[in-house]
Image (cartoon, helix red, strand yellow):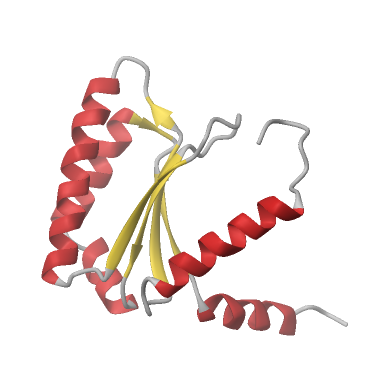
Length: 142
């Protein structure tokens, strides 16, 4: 979508189907989001190599059951600061344990050395979104 375009009903329908697909792929409603803007100029080869290593690392985590699943997403060019992300799904205790490992933190430190605006944040998906929205709306002053 280019600047100035409005979200159409067709776009919302596509997004809705995408969210339904994501939500039905796993029962896990807890996630860890790791996103970035772009490679720091001059460090593109380092980023490409680390990307491959990180996908291999995440695949291993999934195979061992440390995480339930993960998605890799590249966004189309849109002029914003977020151009790609990984979304990892697992129970909260698994995500806590992962974030405390030396391997995870090493990957995050490395990413910060070659990616602009790299960062992680916890997230919820699926039915937990409705629960979170209900909590939020219950706190709106009357």
